[in-house]
Length: 364
Image 1 (cartoon, rainbow, N blue to C red):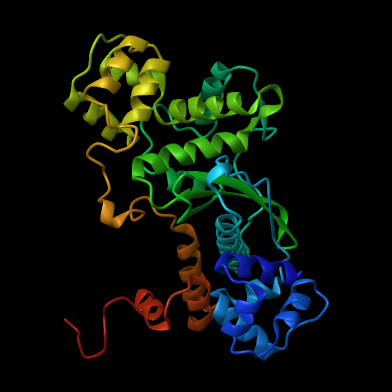
Image 2: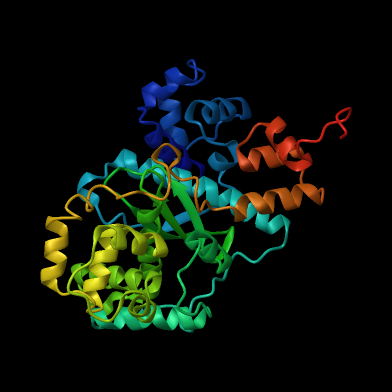
């Protein structure tokens, strides 16, 4: 219903009903806005346009033609996540997915299924079974044991929707299902925090993938998180490959070697050290010594990050949605203005991306 969307967008903007009435220059009263949110009244096109502009969302989002909703949203760090934080993120995700599904329908692409293993969820009872699940998925996806060059591209290829978005600092990411008229079956999405390093984002993607796969009926919340961490480590750093690269047992590891290993797998240094302990290459004593010496700051600061901090989110970006929009535009299934609306870019930028830098009168 439009009312729920309007209320969500207003909370995202951090406005009261009175604030919103002022933001649209008193076009309607706060009381009228309250009636819109309770679906007791419907705004005119003029008011809807003003609300869209004031709240920074599209008119199609407010009208909610696809009746999309988010299910199974769990930030897993609720203590530092405000209602405004959650409303902002949920609004962004809903609007993004609605645009994504729209262009997929235009191109007659199937949004409903992703390449999970048979049965979808797997009930596990122990942390070690999470490692087995990661190995099984690698086999199912025919990945072998080599490091994964681009986690985002892999998940998009397998049918998951991936969004890099500004999230509250304590939230690395979350997974959810998008339901509604525009999604015949629930569409799985993973959202990761743009402000985190590339290495952390890759770990988070694998961690949230685990939450899409693991049926936690035999685990408590703490065990489920440990299982997701183990899955992420096993999926990104397979035991066999690690043992071939650095040996089956090590009594010590030097600083440069550790950095080379973490860059090989493109994972955070801290997660890499824990993974070496989990597979038995180092023991608890070596791990503890590392975190007290060469890796003493690695839990809070990424050593020699792969991605420049000023350009966080530029590497391993989700590209499928943009690619589909330009596909539809090139085939003249949508107009340039529609593509600009879907991509949330200026028309001139979209035209340049379609035609390239070539311009009449500048032939080489």
